[in-house]
Length: 77
Image (cartoon, rainbow, N blue to C red; front, top):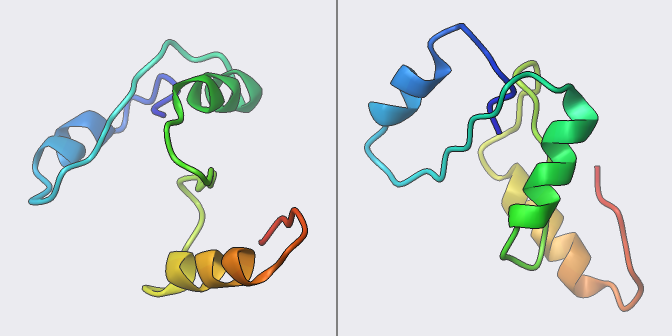
């Protein structure tokens, strides 16, 4: 969710060579953006990654592995 950025994010997304679902909204803050994404979510997991976050290439795979190996509801960070 692009929460009203003016840094060229949309143009960068359009240049990617893989599919990305991109949403833009007028700046409303982190909570508004995340609430909207929860409404739009279609998958089994939700992850919020901000512009100042850095993930290792296998981070999502490892998080999913942990979540799928647990029998309880879990939060992985």
